[in-house]
Length: 134
Image 1 (spheres, rainbow, N blue to C red):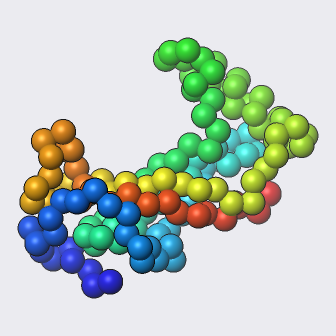
Image 2: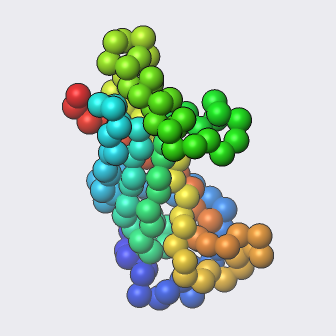
């Protein structure tokens, strides 16, 4: 797919869709480790539809949902530490790969973008990311 980043979005109309020809190898992934366990994966690369750069953050363990609101940093760290302990002990299975949802979040204009959509060209897709070696 040709890189369309030079047109600044003007020639790529907004459309909610999933591109069929996603090239995973064009994305760089980085894991954030906490307590010996990958908690967050960040993927960056060109949108397969409009070609503009995007960054996606995917939380692998959603510990925030167990707190019922805005937890303190100490509470979050304790929960992450417990998840890490359970993964290391085998009580929680460490996955070999993760399915990370990604949405185009480029800040450039695209014709026809609905007013309730503040960014992107409408593309959404899933990256299959191999887990880091423990």
